[in-house]
Length: 255
Image (tube, rainbow, N blue to C red; front, side, top):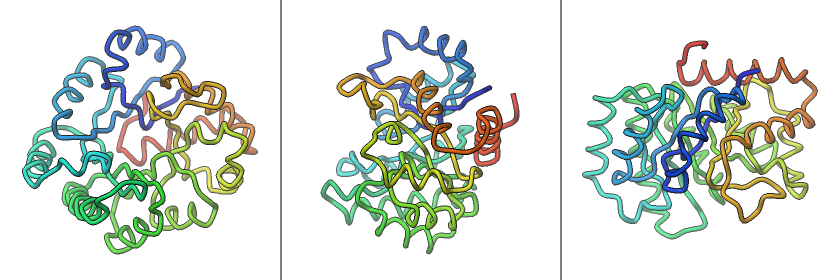
């Protein structure tokens, strides 16, 4: 079975000393692709340089809502230039976070980045927190041709279906390893397998039993094991279908 981590910040400083060994360990574990989202214009050069170091790393660029208070229109111009010059598989990480301030500015930059995704025919990696009610109407209005991923999905079946109906897939991560996440677990049991991607969000979002530790893309196998407990498909069939989902969404070829 082969696996893709559809959302991992492998360029972060937390991995600086261990990145090469970690990538080798991932390869040994059949985690053969890692999709690396961008968060700020300042960090994009480091991200691109990191991804050039390994054929298993696939870069994306975007302005994350957590740092949107420091973003400006020049960053959007720079993003557009990168989209013209670089081979990127998605635009992200973008979104709206209801847990922080500047919802107006977050929404403005989310809207403009969605326009860029539409212009360059790219899927998007969408960050959410307490913001489904803000994000869904915008995505309905935009009608992105290539959809994208709702990163770190944690919500109800009704919320999942709203995104799936808009052509989006759901990034399934460490949330499902927590027993208290019953609402999300129940949703994941019922959604179509065609809507599922795996992700770690490493070094963030540690799994149950690993709180307080940096997360790792190697934990993707633990997430998959938990997913298999929730789903009715055979493990090999489930893994193969998720890989097909990756290839279809990001226009990647089979290995």
